[in-house]
Image (spheres, rainbow, N blue to C red):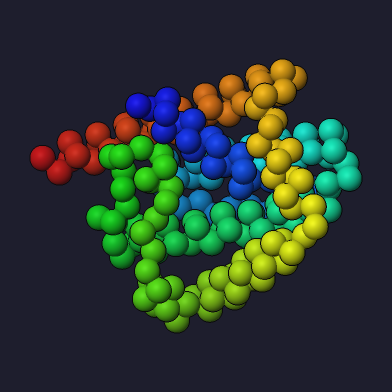
Length: 190
């Protein structure tokens, strides 16, 4: 079951995560203090950088669309981290910690949460607008489909199999952190 969840998460992340230039990669994703979330964020960012490097080396003509995709993904990670922090503070019971990484990473987010957070943190509203604009612009890119196909087929390429294996291992490490922290929280509640 864990392997299937990790494989599904891997496929989703492979399709969605790309990386671009050093300046974007140096942007930090703020820490939340939650070991599972913070580790997952770092693993995702590292994976994006690795994918970006592969794209630039193997398919340099796709670099412009990979750059756009990375900018969008990094901003989206920042956005998700702000949402996670909000939920940790206001609705910790809504963070799913006992159904694997996929459920943990996909927050149940409601428009009223965005409204409240935007009132408290105007930068959140700006970030939301920026992400929507980046996503819209990316969707118009003529090479997006080519990039997605290239990324989707990378795990079949022998020279990249070890990278995918390491990424899966890192996801399993995050799953262990999540499981360990969930057990500690459950134990404290008893």
